[in-house]
Length: 337
Image (cartoon, helix red, strand yellow):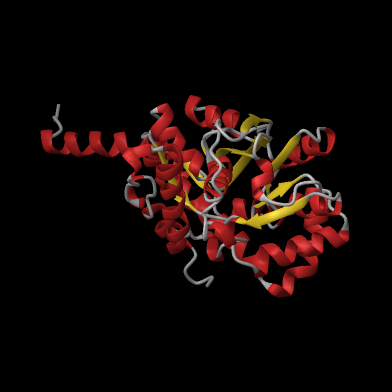
């Protein structure tokens, strides 16, 4: 009886192990891989576009998305592993790292900030917010830090000159201000800020005017999960970039307006105004969903100044942002430029 040479056995064993490895089986499968996305403020428009056009399927991805009632629950979902990717203000990613000890990384941008400090009709200046209650989503992340900085520039300190009360997402804060006149102000962005003005609330200024560029919404993940699913993350991001290109292409304006009306339940005139803000003004949708490094530097600077993080000295952007995932996504788009 012939025996098989040892080297041949080793090669055969290695070959068979590759065939049955999970990565090989995933590569050979035509089944799209699932991603669990958590968001705030409903389904993001680029996600709606990608689903409408079958772009996720094109890149071998299926998506299960869930809208969270506030940023605390969104961060908790990512921390606990019940979500794979989060889309929200990227300062939430920084907070997960620094305040919760979760190794999270930002992989792509999406939108800047067009927030305004909206106040009750009887308030005419920043100084008149002294002694008032202002409302936020969470008191130590993102847009609350914007508000604290703006008021600090006008000589007002949180906890000393005014109180902060957590209420929830942007639409929830608008409703709360309408129902509770004692809630003097909040940071609101389009379309909610537009609706707020129509309801009689007053703007004391914009983030762009008072703080400058600010990286708002972007995609972030647990670093370990992303490393284990690098190809899947790149495929998902590629689908989003392609969808955002379609969203921002001027020839698609009429279809985008219809989508805004449907997804956000906006009146046509509010949708039209929101479109102009999002597509033509600073702080709107970012070209190819690229992270605004200057805007993100400002995010870190605000956290250092307002919360005293890192002893008041902001670290480098690269501590929280890994550009390699975005580069991999863009490489998948070559030929579709």
